[in-house]
Every structure is written in C-alpha cells, then in structure tokens.
Image 1 (cartoon, rainbow, N blue to C red):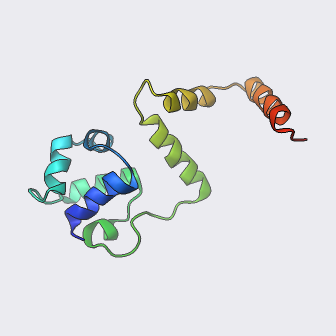
Image 2 (cartoon, rainbow, N blue to C red):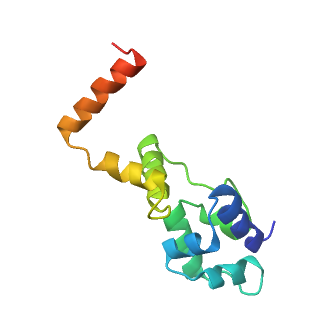
Length: 124
C-alpha cells in the first residue's frame, strides 16, 4: 500500500470521514487532501504531522506502512477521542446534540439521570 493509499484508507475506512470533514480538522482543504490521496501531490511533513497529531495516527505507518496505524490510547484518551469525533459531526446532528447536552449536565442533573437509569435498568 502506498502512502496515498494509506491516507485514503485512514480517512475513508478507519475514520469514516469525508474529504471536507477530514481536512477541516487539520486546517487543510478537501482539495489538498484529494490531491495527495490521488497521488498528484506528495504528503508534506507538515501535513503528516497534522494528521498524526489530530487523529492519533502513527507516523511510521502513515509514511511507510510499518506497524499498526493508530497509536495506543489508554481508556480515557479513547473516550476523549470518541467524544471529539462525535462533536465533529454536523452541527445539527442528533449525536452532536446529545453529547453537548450530556457534557452540560449539572451534578444534580447527573444524579437524576443516574436515578432514572437505575429504575429503568433495575440496578441496585
């Protein structure tokens, strides 16, 4: 697999992002990412660093295919990464609205949610 094929695989298959959504998060244009994926331009060191930093990708994998594509994350880092992906969704999406609502709960509201969930799922 070539570097441009790995970039496409990362964007499309691993992250499930459009050119636009992928590019926006790293400060590039969709056209710039497309040009690299289609082999018309090479990946610059700056682009590579931006991708690796934003998406938790291992540079060795992106550059030459060695090792696994993603950095090992601890459970908390995985949670933050998942929340970031959900918040990157379309502004009007249900998933994004739910995440924002949950993040804005007060301690009292969390207690009410926990109480209701215990009732619904019959947890002691």
